[in-house]
Structure formats: C-alpha cells, structure tokens
Length: 271
Image (cartoon, rainbow, N blue to C red; front, top):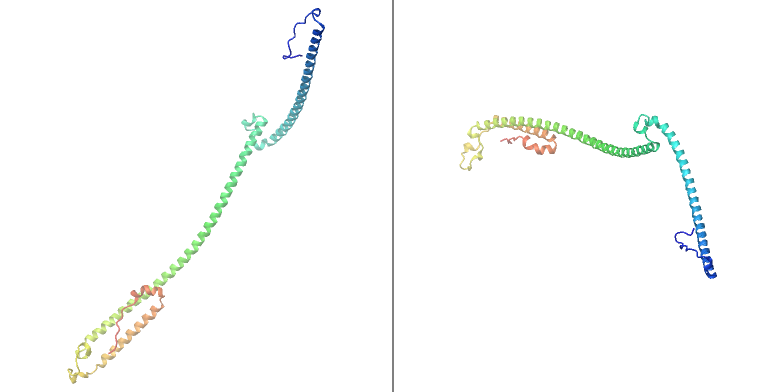
C-alpha cells in the first residue's frame, strides 16, 4: 500500500546488532509509511465511492432515456401504422426495410420539402396577385383607349360628313361659277356687238371742243340697256345665293377651302 513513491525497504538488520536508538528510528519510519498508506487507501476509497455514485447516476439517467426512447418509439410506431395507408409506406420498398428513426428522418425531410413548397406557393400567389393588378390596369387603359377611339371615329365621321357637304357646296359653286362665266361671256359678246357709237367715251382722251355736236348727245339704245340690267340682276342674285351657302360653312373649313370654292364673278355695273 506504500505505492511506487515509497522508499524501498532495506533489509532489516538483525536486532542483536542494532541499538535502541536505531530501533526507535526504524519503528517511527515504519509507522509513517503505514499512516501514509492508510491515508492513501482512504482517499482511494473515497474516490471509488464517488465514481460508483456518479456511475449509478449516469446509469439511472441512461435507463430513463432508454425508457423515454422506448415510449417514443412505440408512439412513433403507432403513428407510422396509422399513416401507412396515407403515405403509402407499405408499397415503398425503400422505406419498408428502414428502421423507425430512418422513417422519421424521411418524414422530416418530406415535411421540409412541404414547407419549401408552401413558401414557393406563397411567392407564386403574390406574383399572381401582381399580375392580376397589372391586368386590371391594362384593362382600364384599354377601355380608355376604346372610348378615345370611339370619340375619334365620331369626329372623323362628322368631319367626313362636313367634308362631303363642303365638297357638294364647292361643286355647286363651280357650276354656278361656270354659269356666271357663261353669262359674263355672253354679256361681253353683247357689248362687243354694239356699234362703235355706243362705246363709252373714256376709251380715249377727247375734249368737248373736239367732239361734234351731233355726237355729244347720242341716242341711247333702250333695248340694250334693259337687257344689260336684267343680266346684272341675274348675276347679283347668283352671287348672293352663293354667298349665303358659303356662310353656312364653319370658319375653320372656310379658310382652307375659300380659295377653291369662291368663284371669280366679274362685277358688272350698268351703264
């Protein structure tokens, strides 16, 4: 019990050759070794008791864990048996040969995959809502464009009708212009067919003294004057009629078509 650090015992000499002081010294030394060995034995026993107590506590904890694991395993087995028809575990050869914890791990992985799918479904729902909002906005813009198109079509239709009416008035004006030109031509021919004595006196500069008395007071041709007045009245009536028709046209159309639709009518003043 002295241990490896104890001093090696020497061979005990014969008592006859030892003195009393040497014997006392040896006795004290042996007593000290015995006390040291006893103390070390007690310390070792205490350590052994502590180790035994800790081991017993660990054994009790492990037994409790084993019991809880057994109960959990039983409950998991019951749950798996209940979920077999739903999860189709009987038909899966990959899961049939696995232990319960492996099946549980597989189920946890499936649960994680389900969570990921739910998150993806949530994102897709958000994208669908965004697309629906964009679609509603596009539908509103399409309705506005359709309304604008209908308004533009109605305006184009009204402008087309107005253009047709203006074109009709322009054609009528052209016809009246041609009639006025024919009347004016006829009137000029009638003027040119008059005798030279009936021409106006302002064609050339003459003095009263150079004009004979017989030509100062010419006889007026009453028939020509009456015919001239009738032609002038007809021309004025046609001009007034055309002006009345043109006044119905709006100002914006009148400005663009005035050069085309206004016939050139010669103003004829009676003599």
